[in-house]
Every structure is written in C-alpha cells, then in structure tokens.
Length: 224
Image (cartoon, rainbow, N blue to C red; front, side):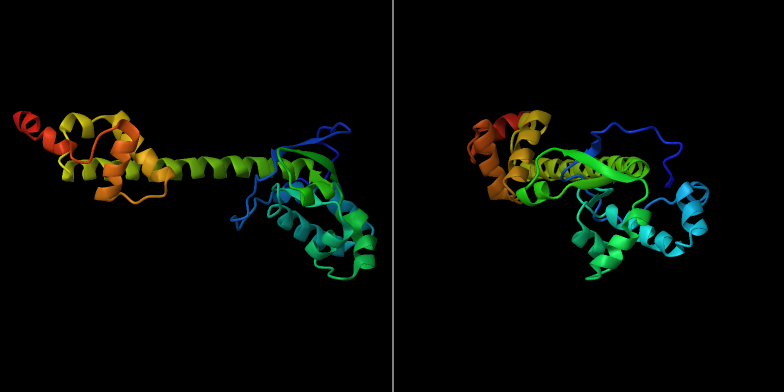
C-alpha cells in the first residue's frame, strides 16, 4: 500500500467511490501490503518525526478494518463509530486527539447505488490508494464467484440430463441444451432438488411436457 498523497492523482471535490453499496470483502482474511511504498510514505516519515509512532499502529487497524466495511475500503465519518473501529472504545476524546494523524490520506467520498436510511445518515471516508486495492480485490472476488456459480449451474444441468435419462424422456429432449437449461434454471430459481417429481414438474412448467411424455416416445426412442 502507498499511504501518502504526494504522488497520487488529485481527487476532485466530489469523489465518487469506485465501489457501490453492497460491494464488500467481508470473507477476506488478507490484504496486500506494499512494504516499500509504506515505509517511504509521508505518513510514516511525519509520524516518526513528530513522535506519533502510535498512529502507525492505529492507522494499520483502520486500513484493515476498512476492507470489512460496506463498501470495502471505506470508513464511516463518525467519531463514535471510528473510535470503536480503531479500538479506542468509549475514549472518544482520545480518538479525536489521534484522528487527524491516523486518517492521513482519507477524505469524504460519495457512494453510488442504493443505500439504506442508516447508511445515508453517515458520510463515508475513502483513501485513494486503499480504494484501488479494494477495487482490484473485489474484481478478483467477483471473478471467482462467477466461476463458482458457473460450475454449480453446470452441475445442476448435468444432474438434470441424467435424471431425464432415468425417466426415459425422449433422447431429442434430454439432449436439447435449451430444454436442459430451462429445466435446470426452473429448479435452481425455485430452490428445488433434482428429483424425479421435480424434474417432471419443471418439464411441464417450462416446455409444456406432461410427466408421462416418455411413454409416448418409447417406441420412437427404441428405433433411435
């Protein structure tokens, strides 16, 4: 991470945060730490020179906690909440004394997307570089989530195709990617397991096939 603002691009008066409400990283246990950029930053230099070494530890807590916030990489601009996040507890005055130093590089930001009433009451703070890290991590997370979801849906389609075979549904039906997808989507969105009865129901609801359709196609399938 780079925690100084001397070589980062200036942000306009209204800074729209790159992530929206709901873009979180709550399940992440790690964040990247760019050691050289941190050690050579103005924040470290001034904290040490001014005898505020304690600010470094407090700032590290805030950076880490910000990735667990909504959106990821932000902090509430509220002294009571910040005191809790920074481990000052009920010592609000102690937090206020440290606030300016430990919030080096943080500034007000606007959040896009739908927000709840409680969210709207609290202004959020963002950090130019931490926001870049949060955005990159969220993109990686989204990619992994999409891959997992695609794999899960592929498994549902495979189970549907096998169940259609067990039910002796005509080959041209069970080998139709469109029909298999329709049945799988119906079961998935309805939170139904891939059982005989549920697949029969899905066939009837999605493509209008009655549960006994396999009996009508038995001779045709034998010829195939």
